[in-house]
Amino acid sequence: NISFGVDNGVIPVFVKARELDPANLPGGDDLLGVAEGKVLAGARPGFLKRQLETDRVLLLVDGLDEVVAEKHDKIVQWISDLVELYPRCRFVVSSRPAGYQADVFQKLRFNEATLCDFNTSQIREYVRRWTKAVEIAEGMSPEDANRESSRYAEALVQRAERNPYVRRIATNPLMLSTLCLVQRYEGGDLPNRRVALYQRCVEGLLFHWDNKRGLPSAILGSVSLDRKMMLMRCLALEMQVQGVAEIKESVVEQSFRDSLEEVGGETNIKLILQNIR
Image (cartoon, rainbow, N blue to C red; front, side, top):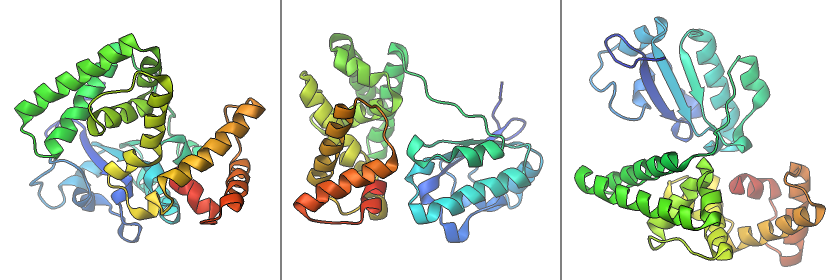
């Protein structure tokens, strides 16, 4: 069990990996400048460094997969350096599989964990919190955001109970984020037909989700949604024919290369793959 508190508990410091500057990575008190929230607002100089040295900090690094390739290794090395400098502090790093380097974090003795499927109450709570955070960020009052988030959460849970395809997607935490995005920004409802639902989710994953989150163009890339959809359709067909659920990166690159040779366009295959991931 962990108790949190500035006076006598563990102090959480939340950092978004994609917002870090590899040329000026923070340490000690400098972490205050990149931390999200106001937990340590007004802290005196030297405060956080002392907490790091007395093993009271929980550093949460979110979205390692969102860091562009040329900056990724420097961010990972920064995490490694902090772990070695403050070995008794706690560190949590989140990443989708595409940006995770298992060997690096295993050497640092990180424990690996995978998100389990959500149950109904967890789906409801996730949607409520997701919607509330978005509404407040866009200027809605906390009271109105509470009401709106509860309405959205109940609507999605009811839809999941009626539609097995929605239910299947909603139990996956990553895909539930996509459902939230579709429900919030594309009309407030979810399609009943499986094909239409999957289409909206794929579009959300390939473009709308990252675009709404404000990811930089270096990650989003210049490839249009239609072109991404074409590449993924061809790849999906190949995987369906082969009867596989996973595929090597080199095979994906060759599939993209073959597809683009037929229609022309951008030929930097590795960059396209990075953008889609």
